Amino acid sequence: MALQIGDLAPSFTLYSSEKQEVSLSDYKGKKVVVLFFPLAFTGVCTEELCSVRDNIATYQNLNTEVLAISVDSLFSLEQFKKQQNLSFPLLSDFNKEVSAAYGALYDEFVLGMKGVSKRSAFVIDEEGKILYAEILEDAGQVPSFENIQKALQA
Image 1 (cartoon, helix red, strand yellow):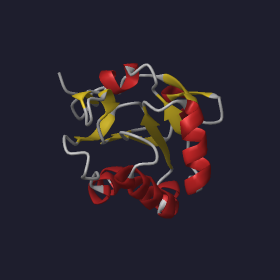
Image 2: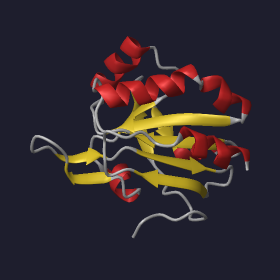
Image 3: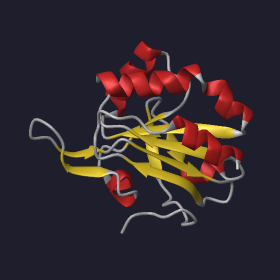
Image 4: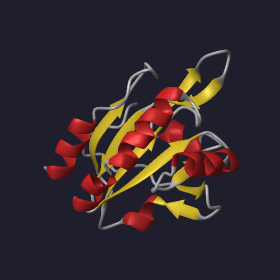
């Protein structure tokens, strides 16, 4: 069953591209935007995450942290983060458990790849409740950053 607004966000601990454990609970008391993205180094993912990078002040002004999650290895994510100069944590859900818990996992993606994160956005409040959820079936689309920011301002 899909996560609904008002649900408690599934907790997680994943390794970042800096090889540090990052838990959702680390951000209690702050809002968090959790972005799942299919694959590092692909066109739409790069465009999406660079757009967040370029607007990071908007999130900081709303006392919000951004976490981006994919099934890539943390080693790939480390290179992707460096190449794109991303200023927020990239987390590896290599075992696909967090993507699955959020309902953001393709059974089958493209070119026979199975178990890739669906492009998705979740806004989580200071208490860990979901304020906004958007899971895209079409990986060519990006989440509505306008709606994400509205949810953060509400």
